[in-house]
Image (cartoon, rainbow, N blue to C red; front, side, top):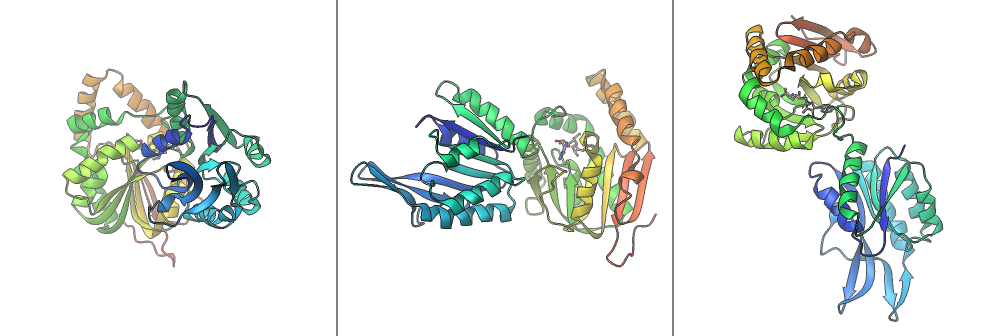
Length: 396
Ligand SMILES: C[S@@+](CC[C@H](N)C(=O)[O-])C[C@H]1O[C@@H](n2cnc3c(N)ncnc32)[C@H](O)[C@@H]1O
């Protein structure tokens, strides 16, 4: 299976432009890596230099990797790769970004053996790479081409727009943000939320705070969609909240909702998957999640990842529902009018998810408290991570 994508093609065909286009459409993810840029003197191409992607500044002294001497004679400067290049690649692995960019790999690094070694280490890491590969053949470039974890796309003037769409989708898949079969259209979801679901969020937010008896700290809303539950909970508590979702489109709408609620300083969006939450171990006091569990194909992995980010004594309130039997009845009626099959599809999803044996899935975790509550108000999994000294605080 490939985890790294390279674009190749003839000179000036738009390889780097394509990469830039992909990156500019991923505004919420963490990207590290390098790019090589052209240096002009008296309007003539006179060299190439290496830049750290996270520190692109005009005033940085140029770290040349190749220079043109005596008109058309080019010399490479492999030391730049073996020093600055290696440093950038090491920082890429340390910084744990969502994506590493290598724009581009060519022939100036033919003799930069240390740099090459680090390129291979990055390619073998679980973090996906998006890069440009010179079309020319060299032992180093050939070694990259033939790796089973690398997929190379050849770009031409004719195919570059089509290629952009394909590469963008592939990158989304690699970073765990692909549309997949469960993709929900964000704009129409938000419309339904505003027209139908809106009353459930303040009710559930209050239930969570009453039930967990928590008032402040860091809250994480997993599969937050357009953000309503996390926002409502933040309004009536002292929590600072992250809204995590794998859909950038959902989060762009969530950002507007945060602004509308005047909560810019306290609620933040976080693009990522429940399978790889971009937060440190034990950094979250309260995890909340409504309606997202039904979409997690690997529930055990997701719940274990949630446990990882929970602080000792922290609680999670995960599931789905409409807050009360009365709200559920109203919403079912409204939704049934919008979509004849809604009730049937919903029942199928809910049954599949509710019938899972959560006690079995969570048996390896050190929990102070675990409850699976099923009522007209919904199905909720409430758990509390053990305190360091084994003291639980959750109570009924
Ligand atoms: C039905 S919506 C619920 C949204 C919101 N919690 C609400 O109650 O309005 C499900 C959300 O889960 C998100 N989601 C699905 N799978 C996910 C995953 N693996 N990681 C993060 N979010 C996910 C979807 O993108 C979607 O926004």
